[in-house]
Image (cartoon, rainbow over all chains, first blue to last red; front, side, top):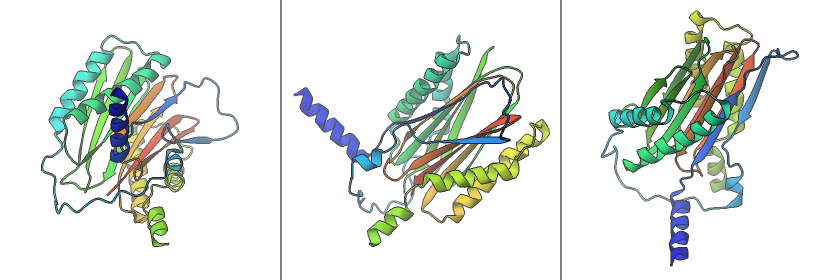
Length: 177
Length: 113
């Protein structure tokens, strides 16, 4: 019985096409100088590449809903409360350690995504970005700009700080037309 | 034939996007050292340039571009993202770029309309 249920759940997931794609990046503290090149760049993809090639799925044809705008908007303040809650509960007493924080970023982003999904806002795609950094007298700037529909799409973000680390969480909600 | 063409045009092409990002980073920051007064303007220019180039591609996508610029001071930074979307049509691309004095991480998320 449980196998059948599992199969059904797997099929449903495939149909809906939602996959948790985790991209995590780390900037390691470099003591040595970059001798040869003046600038280095690396490109990263999502953590599960080649997924498209494995399962050749036919393009899903959506029926017309004749719905122009969302019934329910992206709840900015509710999401901000979620972010505040999750960040303080996970990071209140933590110190910055590379391994721990690497795991922490992945865990926190999954947790936030799950909680925002629980709000069940229909037809909204969710993107969660977490950055945890060490405080060491350095200066840093984060910025973002989006090309989307002003009336339907929105974002919410929160920053948490303690004595040894800081964390920034941003959630973007984009309406799927 | 038509289906293949439309599939190519409406997919998120990582290589194209990453080259756009690298070009705008080189153009805006290049070899400059980290200057607190100018970094605000750099972030805005990098992001605006990327967005401008991306919109010129004329693909049916909504874009989110984020940029983090950090001074090289021995501190560490971890970053992760988690997305709830349609894996067949949407994609993301992250470019880590550095020069002698600063680190820069630019992420582009493309969501199909």
